[in-house]
Length: 164
Image 1 (cartoon, rainbow, N blue to C red):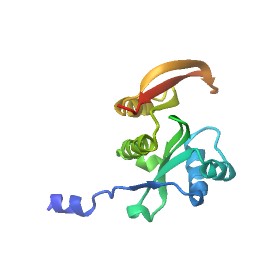
Image 2 (spheres, helix red, strand yellow):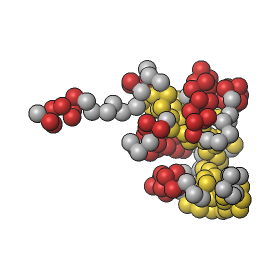
Image 3 (spheres, rainbow, N blue to C red):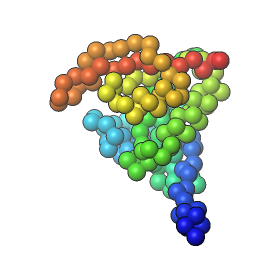
Image 4 (tube, helix red, strand yellow):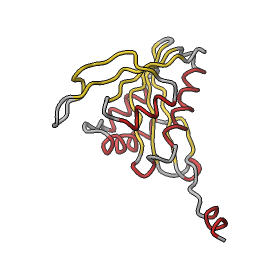
């Protein structure tokens, strides 16, 4: 009986879809709750309209529900930089970021990107674990990059080869 109930109330997997300009408001809202300095809806509209932007969203209810997370990159020639990855607090720890990042990296590779980079706060263990599982390795460090009330933190520059 318990097994049947568990299947009945099983958490539905979010759909991973290409982000659209109409998602700018949802991305800005998620960014505000995920980062100290949130970007505006207008900034997201500009980013999503940029030819070099590649973005994906995780949406609830098979793709018809609210945005639960997103990843946004900017591509130049054969390289890309992941600018942002953000998840709603309710989605953290459920594998959504792993699925979102995997789909995003596959899309970057399909677009001809050979190398992808990102920066992560050295103290963000969850993000560092996510990126390590996705094959990213430290390629640099920016001391004091992130300004925090408790003191500045280094940014780790991570990279991954997508051409293999």
